[in-house]
Length: 353
Image (cartoon, rainbow, N blue to C red; front, side, top):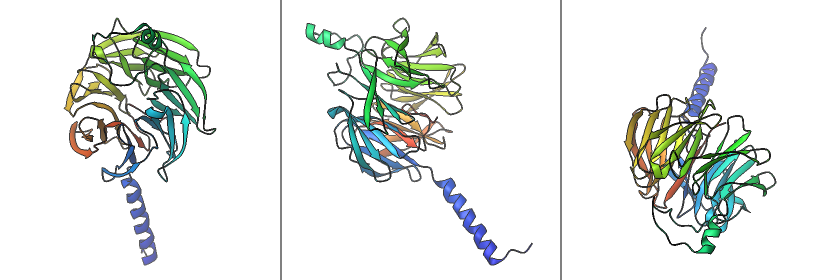
Protein backbone atom coordinates (compact mmCIF):
# COMPACT_ATOMS: atom_id res chain seq x y z
CA UNK A 1 0.00 0.00 0.00
CA UNK A 2 1.32 3.39 -0.98
CA UNK A 3 1.42 5.91 1.86
CA UNK A 4 0.14 9.38 1.13
CA UNK A 5 1.79 12.51 2.49
CA UNK A 6 -1.16 12.88 4.91
CA UNK A 7 -0.73 9.29 6.22
CA UNK A 8 3.00 9.84 6.64
CA UNK A 9 2.31 13.05 8.55
CA UNK A 10 -0.13 11.25 10.86
CA UNK A 11 2.32 8.39 11.50
CA UNK A 12 5.11 10.87 12.17
CA UNK A 13 2.87 12.76 14.59
CA UNK A 14 1.84 9.58 16.42
CA UNK A 15 5.46 8.38 16.62
CA UNK A 16 6.57 11.74 17.98
CA UNK A 17 3.73 11.70 20.54
CA UNK A 18 4.60 8.17 21.71
CA UNK A 19 8.27 9.08 22.04
CA UNK A 20 7.40 12.23 23.96
CA UNK A 21 5.20 10.22 26.30
CA UNK A 22 7.88 7.57 26.77
CA UNK A 23 10.40 10.28 27.59
CA UNK A 24 8.22 11.90 30.27
CA UNK A 25 9.64 10.58 33.54
CA UNK A 26 7.77 12.77 36.01
CA UNK A 27 8.89 14.87 38.97
CA UNK A 28 10.47 14.41 42.37
CA UNK A 29 9.61 16.51 45.42
CA UNK A 30 12.30 17.00 48.09
CA UNK A 31 11.50 18.43 51.53
CA UNK A 32 14.15 20.72 53.00
CA UNK A 33 14.45 21.33 56.72
CA UNK A 34 15.97 24.76 56.09
CA UNK A 35 13.72 25.70 53.20
CA UNK A 36 10.62 24.61 51.35
CA UNK A 37 10.23 21.81 48.81
CA UNK A 38 12.55 21.47 45.83
CA UNK A 39 11.02 20.14 42.60
CA UNK A 40 13.29 18.03 40.40
CA UNK A 41 12.46 17.38 36.75
CA UNK A 42 13.30 13.71 36.26
CA UNK A 43 13.69 14.19 32.50
CA UNK A 44 16.70 16.46 33.00
CA UNK A 45 17.51 15.50 36.60
CA UNK A 46 17.73 19.15 37.56
CA UNK A 47 16.03 21.27 40.23
CA UNK A 48 13.48 23.42 38.42
CA UNK A 49 11.69 25.29 41.20
CA UNK A 50 11.21 25.70 44.93
CA UNK A 51 7.85 25.60 46.68
CA UNK A 52 7.27 27.93 49.62
CA UNK A 53 5.34 25.79 52.16
CA UNK A 54 4.49 28.88 54.28
CA UNK A 55 6.13 27.45 57.41
CA UNK A 56 9.53 26.39 58.73
CA UNK A 57 10.93 22.92 59.20
CA UNK A 58 9.27 20.75 56.52
CA UNK A 59 10.06 17.05 56.83
CA UNK A 60 7.65 14.28 55.89
CA UNK A 61 5.77 14.56 52.63
CA UNK A 62 3.39 12.53 50.50
CA UNK A 63 1.31 12.77 47.34
CA UNK A 64 -2.32 12.03 46.60
CA UNK A 65 -2.91 9.08 44.27
CA UNK A 66 -3.65 11.38 41.32
CA UNK A 67 -0.61 13.54 42.05
CA UNK A 68 -2.68 16.71 42.31
CA UNK A 69 -1.97 17.33 46.00
CA UNK A 70 1.35 17.40 47.84
CA UNK A 71 1.05 17.11 51.62
CA UNK A 72 4.00 18.40 53.68
CA UNK A 73 4.48 18.20 57.46
CA UNK A 74 5.63 21.59 58.76
CA UNK A 75 7.18 20.97 62.13
CA UNK A 76 7.43 24.49 63.48
CA UNK A 77 3.74 25.39 63.29
CA UNK A 78 2.26 21.95 64.03
CA UNK A 79 0.48 21.70 60.69
CA UNK A 80 0.51 20.16 57.26
CA UNK A 81 0.58 22.28 54.11
CA UNK A 82 -1.69 21.15 51.26
CA UNK A 83 -0.10 22.16 47.96
CA UNK A 84 -1.65 22.25 44.50
CA UNK A 85 1.02 20.61 42.30
CA UNK A 86 -0.35 22.35 39.18
CA UNK A 87 0.46 25.80 40.60
CA UNK A 88 2.91 24.89 43.42
CA UNK A 89 0.83 27.10 45.72
CA UNK A 90 -0.27 26.27 49.27
CA UNK A 91 -4.04 25.81 49.23
CA UNK A 92 -4.47 25.34 52.96
CA UNK A 93 -2.61 24.67 56.20
CA UNK A 94 -4.29 22.20 58.53
CA UNK A 95 -3.33 22.04 62.24
CA UNK A 96 -2.38 18.50 63.28
CA UNK A 97 -0.42 18.62 66.54
CA UNK A 98 3.01 19.35 67.97
CA UNK A 99 6.04 18.36 65.91
CA UNK A 100 4.47 16.60 62.90
CA UNK A 101 7.06 14.54 61.07
CA UNK A 102 6.06 11.50 58.99
CA UNK A 103 3.37 11.58 56.30
CA UNK A 104 1.64 8.75 54.44
CA UNK A 105 -1.33 9.16 52.12
CA UNK A 106 -3.95 6.53 51.33
CA UNK A 107 -7.11 7.37 49.43
CA UNK A 108 -8.25 10.84 50.48
CA UNK A 109 -6.71 10.54 53.93
CA UNK A 110 -3.30 11.71 55.14
CA UNK A 111 -1.76 9.94 58.14
CA UNK A 112 0.63 12.21 60.02
CA UNK A 113 2.76 11.30 63.04
CA UNK A 114 3.22 13.99 65.66
CA UNK A 115 4.82 14.05 69.10
CA UNK A 116 3.20 16.04 71.93
CA UNK A 117 6.15 15.28 74.24
CA UNK A 118 8.93 15.99 71.75
CA UNK A 119 11.45 18.69 72.66
CA UNK A 120 12.94 18.78 69.17
CA UNK A 121 16.61 18.57 68.28
CA UNK A 122 18.68 15.54 67.27
CA UNK A 123 18.18 12.15 68.96
CA UNK A 124 20.56 11.13 71.74
CA UNK A 125 23.43 8.82 70.92
CA UNK A 126 22.98 5.16 71.77
CA UNK A 127 23.76 4.62 75.45
CA UNK A 128 23.99 8.35 76.15
CA UNK A 129 23.30 9.53 79.71
CA UNK A 130 21.04 12.50 80.29
CA UNK A 131 19.74 14.25 83.41
CA UNK A 132 15.93 14.36 83.32
CA UNK A 133 13.59 16.13 85.72
CA UNK A 134 10.48 14.42 87.11
CA UNK A 135 8.26 16.66 84.99
CA UNK A 136 10.28 15.88 81.86
CA UNK A 137 10.07 12.17 82.60
CA UNK A 138 6.30 12.41 82.96
CA UNK A 139 6.05 14.40 79.73
CA UNK A 140 8.16 11.84 77.86
CA UNK A 141 5.65 9.14 78.75
CA UNK A 142 2.98 10.86 76.69
CA UNK A 143 2.58 8.78 73.55
CA UNK A 144 2.87 10.10 70.05
CA UNK A 145 -0.15 10.12 67.79
CA UNK A 146 -1.10 9.56 64.19
CA UNK A 147 -3.39 12.36 63.09
CA UNK A 148 -5.80 11.36 60.32
CA UNK A 149 -6.65 14.22 57.98
CA UNK A 150 -9.54 14.05 55.53
CA UNK A 151 -8.17 15.83 52.47
CA UNK A 152 -11.65 16.36 51.04
CA UNK A 153 -12.96 18.01 54.21
CA UNK A 154 -9.66 19.78 54.86
CA UNK A 155 -9.43 18.92 58.55
CA UNK A 156 -8.14 16.38 61.04
CA UNK A 157 -11.00 14.00 61.80
CA UNK A 158 -9.46 11.69 64.41
CA UNK A 159 -6.20 10.32 65.77
CA UNK A 160 -4.59 7.02 66.69
CA UNK A 161 -2.51 6.80 69.85
CA UNK A 162 0.91 5.29 69.17
CA UNK A 163 3.93 4.81 71.40
CA UNK A 164 6.53 7.33 72.57
CA UNK A 165 8.18 8.99 69.55
CA UNK A 166 6.33 7.32 66.71
CA UNK A 167 8.48 7.33 63.58
CA UNK A 168 7.67 5.05 60.63
CA UNK A 169 4.18 4.43 59.21
CA UNK A 170 3.19 1.53 56.97
CA UNK A 171 -0.06 -0.01 55.72
CA UNK A 172 -0.78 -3.69 55.41
CA UNK A 173 -1.23 -4.77 51.80
CA UNK A 174 -5.00 -5.15 52.23
CA UNK A 175 -5.27 -1.71 53.83
CA UNK A 176 -6.86 -3.04 57.01
CA UNK A 177 -3.96 -2.41 59.38
CA UNK A 178 -1.70 0.51 60.22
CA UNK A 179 1.76 -0.50 61.43
CA UNK A 180 3.98 2.04 63.19
CA UNK A 181 7.44 2.08 64.75
CA UNK A 182 7.90 3.71 68.16
CA UNK A 183 11.49 4.75 68.81
CA UNK A 184 11.49 5.61 72.49
CA UNK A 185 10.03 2.38 73.90
CA UNK A 186 11.37 0.00 71.23
CA UNK A 187 8.00 -1.23 70.01
CA UNK A 188 6.09 -1.75 66.81
CA UNK A 189 2.33 -1.36 67.19
CA UNK A 190 -0.36 -2.65 64.86
CA UNK A 191 -3.69 -0.80 64.71
CA UNK A 192 -7.01 -1.23 62.98
CA UNK A 193 -7.29 1.25 60.11
CA UNK A 194 -11.05 1.41 60.63
CA UNK A 195 -11.16 2.04 64.38
CA UNK A 196 -7.59 2.83 65.42
CA UNK A 197 -7.77 0.04 68.02
CA UNK A 198 -4.43 -1.41 69.11
CA UNK A 199 -4.29 -4.97 67.79
CA UNK A 200 -0.77 -6.05 68.63
CA UNK A 201 2.50 -4.83 70.15
CA UNK A 202 5.88 -6.22 69.10
CA UNK A 203 8.76 -5.45 71.47
CA UNK A 204 12.04 -5.10 69.60
CA UNK A 205 14.57 -4.77 72.45
CA UNK A 206 15.59 -8.45 72.37
CA UNK A 207 16.37 -8.01 68.68
CA UNK A 208 17.57 -4.41 68.64
CA UNK A 209 16.79 -0.84 69.69
CA UNK A 210 15.24 2.25 68.14
CA UNK A 211 12.99 0.96 65.33
CA UNK A 212 12.66 3.59 62.62
CA UNK A 213 11.98 2.65 59.00
CA UNK A 214 9.34 0.02 58.16
CA UNK A 215 8.16 -1.44 54.84
CA UNK A 216 5.89 -4.25 53.72
CA UNK A 217 7.00 -6.41 50.79
CA UNK A 218 5.11 -6.08 47.48
CA UNK A 219 3.44 -9.47 48.09
CA UNK A 220 2.42 -8.48 51.62
CA UNK A 221 4.10 -11.49 53.22
CA UNK A 222 7.03 -9.76 54.92
CA UNK A 223 7.70 -6.63 56.96
CA UNK A 224 11.21 -5.24 57.35
CA UNK A 225 12.24 -2.76 60.06
CA UNK A 226 15.48 -0.86 60.61
CA UNK A 227 16.83 -0.86 64.18
CA UNK A 228 18.96 2.27 64.22
CA UNK A 229 20.82 1.91 67.51
CA UNK A 230 21.62 -1.78 66.97
CA UNK A 231 22.69 -1.59 63.32
CA UNK A 232 20.26 -4.29 62.31
CA UNK A 233 17.41 -5.12 59.99
CA UNK A 234 14.51 -7.02 61.60
CA UNK A 235 12.33 -9.28 59.46
CA UNK A 236 8.73 -10.22 60.38
CA UNK A 237 6.13 -12.33 58.62
CA UNK A 238 2.64 -11.07 57.72
CA UNK A 239 1.42 -11.97 61.23
CA UNK A 240 4.25 -9.90 62.79
CA UNK A 241 6.22 -12.86 64.05
CA UNK A 242 9.93 -11.98 64.13
CA UNK A 243 11.79 -14.32 61.78
CA UNK A 244 15.34 -13.03 61.98
CA UNK A 245 17.67 -10.06 62.15
CA UNK A 246 20.38 -9.06 59.70
CA UNK A 247 23.48 -6.98 60.45
CA UNK A 248 23.61 -3.67 58.57
CA UNK A 249 25.81 -0.63 58.39
CA UNK A 250 25.81 2.00 61.12
CA UNK A 251 22.52 3.77 61.94
CA UNK A 252 20.14 2.31 59.34
CA UNK A 253 17.02 4.39 58.73
CA UNK A 254 15.16 4.65 55.40
CA UNK A 255 14.22 1.32 53.84
CA UNK A 256 12.37 0.11 50.74
CA UNK A 257 11.85 -2.90 48.53
CA UNK A 258 12.24 -2.57 44.80
CA UNK A 259 9.08 -3.07 42.74
CA UNK A 260 9.84 -6.75 42.07
CA UNK A 261 10.30 -7.48 45.78
CA UNK A 262 13.62 -9.16 45.04
CA UNK A 263 15.84 -6.56 46.69
CA UNK A 264 15.86 -4.42 49.82
CA UNK A 265 17.58 -1.03 49.97
CA UNK A 266 18.65 0.58 53.26
CA UNK A 267 20.09 4.03 53.91
CA UNK A 268 22.80 3.47 56.53
CA UNK A 269 23.19 7.03 57.77
CA UNK A 270 26.50 6.93 59.63
CA UNK A 271 28.13 4.45 57.28
CA UNK A 272 27.36 6.91 54.49
CA UNK A 273 26.07 4.13 52.27
CA UNK A 274 22.96 2.90 50.51
CA UNK A 275 22.97 -0.85 51.10
CA UNK A 276 21.44 -3.46 48.79
CA UNK A 277 20.28 -6.87 50.03
CA UNK A 278 18.78 -9.97 48.47
CA UNK A 279 15.20 -10.04 49.82
CA UNK A 280 15.14 -13.87 49.94
CA UNK A 281 18.54 -14.78 51.39
CA UNK A 282 19.17 -11.37 53.03
CA UNK A 283 22.77 -11.50 51.84
CA UNK A 284 24.30 -8.12 51.16
CA UNK A 285 24.79 -7.42 47.47
CA UNK A 286 26.54 -4.08 47.64
CA UNK A 287 27.37 -0.96 49.68
CA UNK A 288 26.94 2.14 47.55
CA UNK A 289 29.07 5.01 48.84
CA UNK A 290 26.96 8.17 49.30
CA UNK A 291 27.05 11.25 51.53
CA UNK A 292 26.33 12.65 54.98
CA UNK A 293 23.00 12.16 56.80
CA UNK A 294 21.23 10.35 54.01
CA UNK A 295 17.88 9.32 55.49
CA UNK A 296 15.23 8.91 52.80
CA UNK A 297 15.14 7.89 49.16
CA UNK A 298 12.86 7.03 46.26
CA UNK A 299 13.09 5.12 43.02
CA UNK A 300 12.19 7.06 39.89
CA UNK A 301 8.82 5.96 38.44
CA UNK A 302 10.58 3.94 35.70
CA UNK A 303 12.73 2.18 38.35
CA UNK A 304 15.94 3.12 36.57
CA UNK A 305 17.38 5.38 39.26
CA UNK A 306 17.19 6.11 42.97
CA UNK A 307 17.16 9.62 44.46
CA UNK A 308 18.72 9.78 47.94
CA UNK A 309 18.32 12.92 50.07
CA UNK A 310 21.55 13.65 51.96
CA UNK A 311 20.96 16.53 54.35
CA UNK A 312 24.54 17.23 55.34
CA UNK A 313 25.97 16.80 51.86
CA UNK A 314 23.91 19.61 50.32
CA UNK A 315 22.29 17.46 47.71
CA UNK A 316 20.24 14.63 46.33
CA UNK A 317 22.39 11.74 45.09
CA UNK A 318 21.27 9.99 41.88
CA UNK A 319 22.03 6.26 41.78
CA UNK A 320 21.88 4.04 38.69
CA UNK A 321 19.87 0.94 39.69
CA UNK A 322 21.50 -1.36 37.14
CA UNK A 323 25.07 -0.30 37.91
CA UNK A 324 24.40 0.34 41.63
CA UNK A 325 26.58 3.42 41.60
CA UNK A 326 26.16 7.19 42.03
CA UNK A 327 26.00 8.96 38.68
CA UNK A 328 25.39 12.55 39.76
CA UNK A 329 24.31 14.87 42.55
CA UNK A 330 21.53 17.45 42.35
CA UNK A 331 22.67 20.38 44.48
CA UNK A 332 20.38 21.34 47.36
CA UNK A 333 21.86 23.46 50.15
CA UNK A 334 18.70 23.63 52.29
CA UNK A 335 19.20 20.35 54.21
CA UNK A 336 17.17 17.86 52.16
CA UNK A 337 15.23 15.41 54.34
CA UNK A 338 12.86 13.29 52.24
CA UNK A 339 11.89 12.62 48.64
CA UNK A 340 8.81 11.30 46.82
CA UNK A 341 7.93 11.17 43.13
CA UNK A 342 4.97 11.40 40.78
CA UNK A 343 4.05 9.08 39.22
CA UNK A 344 4.30 7.38 42.62
CA UNK A 345 7.14 4.90 43.02
CA UNK A 346 8.80 2.64 45.57
CA UNK A 347 10.72 4.42 48.31
CA UNK A 348 11.27 4.89 52.01
CA UNK A 349 8.41 7.43 52.26
CA UNK A 350 5.93 6.12 49.72
CA UNK A 351 4.70 3.15 47.68
CA UNK A 352 2.49 2.97 44.61
CA UNK A 353 -0.80 1.22 45.40
